[in-house]
Image (cartoon, rainbow, N blue to C red):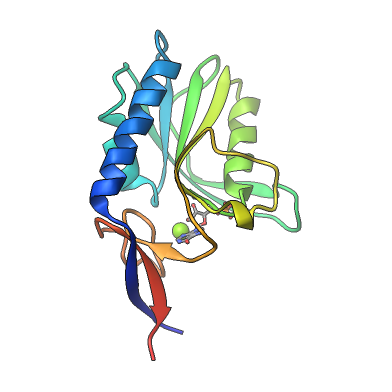
Amino acid sequence: MSYVLDKVLIDGGSIQKRVKELGEQITRDYAGKQPVAVCTLRGAIPFYADLIRVIDLPVTVDTITVSSYGSGTTSGSLKVISDMRTDVKGRDVLIVDDIIDSGKTSLALEKMLKERGANSVKICALLDKPSRRVVDIKGDYVGFDIPDEFVVGYGLDWDEKFRNLPHVYTLKSRE
Ligand code: IMP
Ligand code: MG
């Protein structure tokens, strides 16, 4: 099956406006702290780059690449493909993700960072598909709730395509 862009679900201007609001909220919530903002590669790249520039705090920037594999409704296990460099012991960590779908990746990552001794772990995701959740997790900061549709753009891919688009799009199958 091959897919092409269908329509714009969230335009770049609306994304920027919402990212600014999230940045302001994070700035207020972490006032006086020096959080570690972790970019989950590769889907969160554009969101992360925009977000950290509207957080008015001395954030530590870092990246991690993980993939979750698990079955059923457990968090499964997390495979760390490329780890972060910061020692998170005692730190306040903000995971920055592209989308919370089943929730397995975020939950497993949160668990791992807590096991490493983080003082607090929160999740910031550009998008959330609440209807797809199979594990009990909630984003602490969410840009937009979206319906159960596959989306691409602004970091999100289908088959490694469309990550560089400025808007979030739905897809349709090519006839
Ligand atoms: P989860 O562990 O099921 O929450 O998986 C989240 C990951 O699945 C995201 O970080 C994305 O890489 C991918 N994903 C889930 N839904 C979509 C989508 O609609 N478009 C593109 N990638 C998605
Ligand atoms: Mg992906």
